[in-house]
Amino acid sequence: MFEFLLLLIIASIAGSIGASLAGRKGLGCFTSLALGFVGALLGRWLAEQLDLPLLWTIRDFPVIWSVVGAALFVALLNLISGRGRSS
Image 1 (cartoon, rainbow, N blue to C red):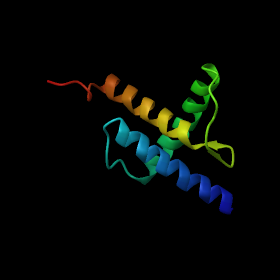
Image 2: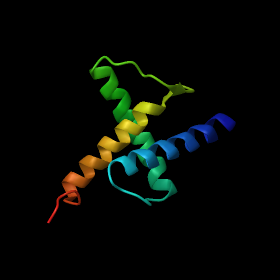
Image 3: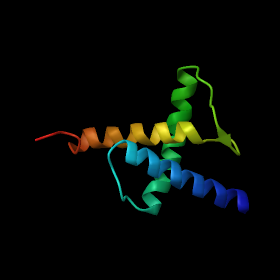
């Protein structure tokens, strides 16, 4: 149970940092949590495709790649929604 709570906290922090890097702030706990897990999936996939090391992992959760993946995912959402365009 402790490991699961630890993963939730790490994913939430990673998602929040990734969203901040991509220009979104104040998304909330559940959104940051979801971004952390999506970022982990996207980041791990990207690292495997580019044959890069997973770097820093906690309980097989790729922390650095979660932040990178979350930032890329939020940047893609910004691009699709038009939020990243200047008027």
